[in-house]
Image 1 (cartoon, helix red, strand yellow):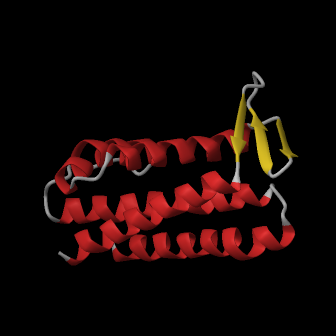
Image 2 (spheres, one colour):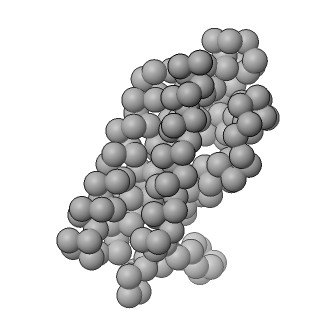
Length: 152
């Protein structure tokens, strides 16, 4: 569980560096994908650390190793137990969908300071630095909550 927390910290630090150092220097919207990916991986690792803590303390039953099983276990058992807002579970799912969308996207392009990602039906998803700042702050909150849970 502490390995998962460490991974969460590493991904969060990577996202922070990209967002506050690299992105302003290069002003390249395609970097937003890396930022959102790191935030997503940080949130997923925090979620995993909390789940492993739950397994060790017998309030989370066995769960699968893929994202969706972890997310369901987190939403159903860990979030209510630790009073983690539904906002976090929604954010975790949304950012995972963005990662999947990027993997399957036929078209991505910058428009101003935003990155546009299209799915196969050409429905668009827009990523911006402002959204990245908000997601990064939420990921920091969850990581702090993770530390509290693991150290309790």
